[in-house]
Amino acid sequence: METVIDTGRLVLRRFTTDDLDAFYELGSRPEIIRYAQATPLASREQALEFMKAAPFHDYATYGYGRFACVWKATGAVIGFSGVKYVPEIEDTELGYRFLPEFWGRGLATEAGAASIEFARSTLGLGRLVAMVHPDNVASARVVTKLGFSVEKKLRYSGLPGVDIDLFARSLATPRCAAGVP
Image (cartoon, rainbow, N blue to C red):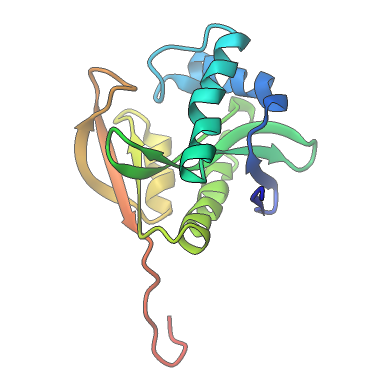
């Protein structure tokens, strides 16, 4: 069954091959990928292969992966958000990426909060991490708003030669007595 999450301004759903053009744009524009990906996707064919190797593989293998973020006002895919298991670090990561014309609108925080709740309530995860390039101040601000804090620095093959900030947070629901949070 396909998961669909309505955040208010966005619908989060699994990627399909119909999303190829948007997926290619999100992985090929230098201003979008500069903190997240060493080399841009070179073609739509390469983007399709990456879709098969990343989100489609993740859905089939782990039962979850990044969601396409659909702008409700137009029905267009304008980004992605969600959690994915990263074997290299043996942890589940929250990530997001949006087209520049949608930056600064709080959409990463909105989609991130929905993805965290999905990870907690639907997947039953107890922890999430977020890998943030040290120069990506905006992304660090988003994950901090979402309750993450820096755990350590690490090297990651997706961004060679960079000490990535690994943010982490617990998803454990706080216990409350007599309805007090």
